[in-house]
Image (cartoon, rainbow, N blue to C red; front, side, top):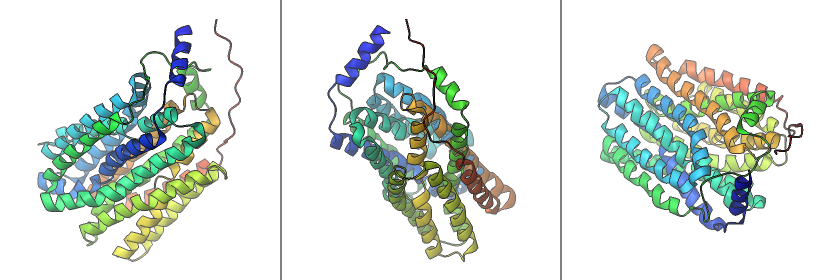
Length: 415
């Protein structure tokens, strides 16, 4: 116990990186990692047509990717806390490059699922929000921490706006295989950027002393109804956004719209999500978070229903994308703030990891069912209406969430 306390003192007294350096490098990393990920739907038709696969085959690999991201995300956070986030980022960049190259060169569906699914999922766990938020939490003053996390979230959205059109251009100009190999080289830029967020004085061994053990924190959270309700809502979030992100390009092409419409639509989602995430985070400081979440999920259902009801045109697609962009990842800061408000920050990364895992199970179901039901019925209609129903469900289950800090019995003092 004494050794662990000395480690805590060393960490708190270590010199810190400048806020500008952390935000610049962290935002660039998230822009690359999330930006590439958001464009995967553009490869659905080129890959399945070239390989003679069904859409379910492609969708299943992306579904595995989302599950792997959720599973490995919990452990990536633990490794970053133990060995330093910069090492995890470098490892994640290498895995990302290998996964993208595997997507381009896989000769069969099994290898495609292992590379596009498992490898890239693990890479995303080590190069996205969980790891970057850990750096921000340790290196930036608490008075500006929430704002800085919002900037990182907005960077991921800007990455979608920036990278998706670039990916569409690469596919049309170079072909789908060469485009993936170009991205495999580009994602390695994360490695030198990771040097910019190498934390001074970071040493291995030990951790700050906490009132609860990991087992106690998990037992408390999973027995608390509000935690379960937040997880249920986050499941719906994953289902909706990944189904739309992966399958909407093919849905629009099936309806006779050009691939450029899909590229612009995904880019608009990313652009408007920059504003949506910032607005939601700001409102979370003033309004009840459960009401904000309920509104977001209900508004998504209304937007999807209006999109299906209105005559389809490029303009209707762009309007839908703008509205969905405002609602896209706006659940992220609000949900994580609710978890922090209820349970405190001692085990926030771990608890947020479990909530995010629920999100990724929903992502798996959304992307896989999209491909499965399309192959069975020749249409995405069932999944669109399922997304509407789940949005209403998520709005309802978030309303009873109790945001007040949980009341704990005093922990016995260690000998």
